[in-house]
Length: 281
Figure 1 (spheres, helix red, strand yellow):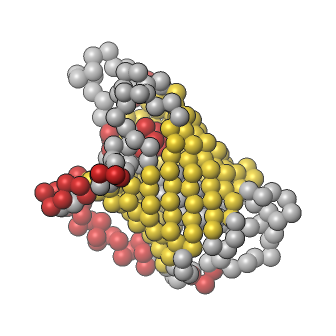
Figure 2 (figure 1 turned 30 degrees about the vertical axis):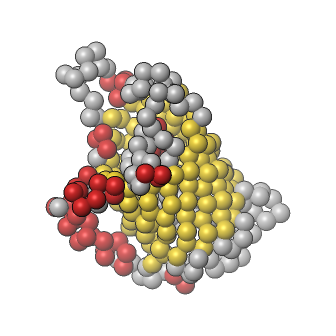
């Protein structure tokens, strides 16, 4: 409950902590570059092609409650929550670095995000962003896993994020993804894994949009109990921030984990409610 009180206490600061920037949303500029396809740094679980501007620092709190399937016993997932704290800094408008810590498997992660091509009328029909990350699972214990070495705690991920703003309301994205875990929990699972992320955003009103993303895992082991991650949610733009509310069958939030270890099943109501809140400094 202490975590809940903390989150409720800081929520207003994230949503209304800065001057209202709504007047700047979707305003055409003199540049021929297309306006950002996504307003949030995430579509839902997948990274989006949005970048942090030069010398800006984003602090992102991401929260996933436990499965709502448990009902009132766990207060619809409240007692089994996972939190991720993420700092992203814009070295330039096209180069971002990040560092995060997630309570899921006590995971630390460092990331690099590079914008390679920007959608521009008469030039490029898409925006392409490169995203790479390295994570460390610090929950692994040598006492319970004899022979465990430091390298076994590490994992890596690389994505090409390819988005297109189709019109003022609709944006789509593809995310070919490679991720590698030095230690896998399923015996038959290959360490190097392949997936394709598909995502989109449809603007409903000036403040609200509907967002969805889905990850297709191509070489998941046949004996694996894990599922492809499907996430559906809403973005709320307020006070210059994007507040994301969503439902997903993947409780973990790092790339390797939500693609490789999604346990929920939409058909059985085994899904997780969550949100992302960002603050700009």
